[in-house]
Image 1 (tube, rainbow, N blue to C red):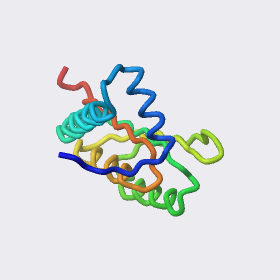
Image 2 (image 1 turned 120 degrees about the horizontal axis):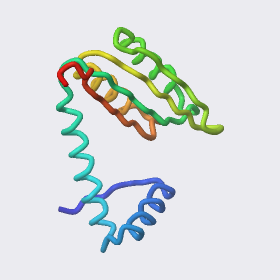
Image 3 (image 1 turned 60 degrees about the vertical axis):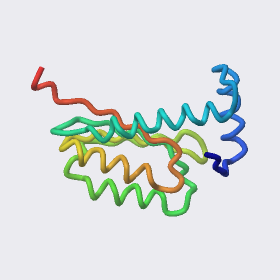
Length: 135
């Protein structure tokens, strides 16, 4: 099936560089591989259950109107499971936020997904682990 996608020039240029470095035969093959990886990541996140410790790493544009307020609102909504957070200014336009959570896996996942969906968020990575009690 053919689809059309609009992308910023800098994102497409970087993607094309990676395609060349990895030896893909076409942009389409790189996109298919990226979608497969996205699906695997989604399925892995969907399996987060039980009490978990999680780290959400976010890179976002602080010049995006309303974004910092929305991120703060989400963090307040999940304040019962947020243990700590750290904010770093990467450059004039971009910030890094690292948030440590401890709670029910589905709540940790929901917090990450809510942040991921905001306009101006460039990258979100959720890493979770059990508390090690069952080991």
